[in-house]
Image 1 (spheres, rainbow, N blue to C red):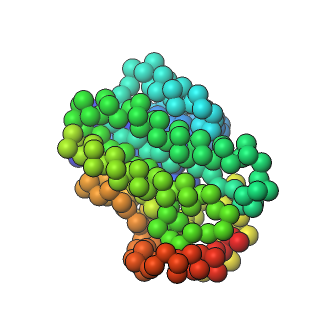
Image 2: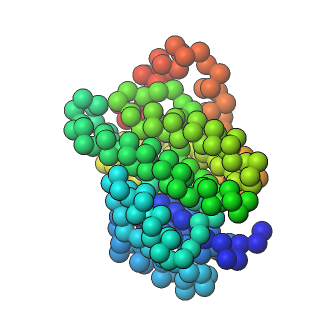
Length: 263
């Protein structure tokens, strides 16, 4: 695959799956635009990848829960004279309190970050991909989008939107050479649970449920290159998705209520 002269933009790139995408795509020869809030983490990662792979690494510290952030990101890319060929919408967070107990500002921030910003970035960057006849977009959804719903998990509803929207856009874009893939990972070893305050609960889950982020990213990149609209990485996750999706809605509801590990 020829990647010389191509650029990947990754949101939530400072750690976890986002940083792993950055390392994987740098090794493939993509120049990078890394976006996250933690500038110190981005600087360290950019220095590492430039040194090890000789690629150009630009970084932007931005709060993607800010409604102004999508245009800020697109404007930064234009100012650099770059074009985005590979977009990874990875930035995310999840609350772990009851819906009515959480302040609306927190809920609105989740929706802005993982629904509105994600969608607007595609709206801003996809037209140029379509015009050039080549582009790849990975939107990080979750196995939660394919599993039974969980109590108080706005995260699951958001990730369901990402799953369906990604498939719809893939139908529209694919005839123009642009592939869109919804990545639906299960439990992945990263800082996500530490940041969200759910590490204690997550650590009690059996080890076979967990994947390393490198395996998740490898499978995601292979899927989007092949034009697969949905990627569920890992055998265990594939079994879970295959088992739960055909269940009637009433049974999914009861399973979700009974089995939600973060309840």
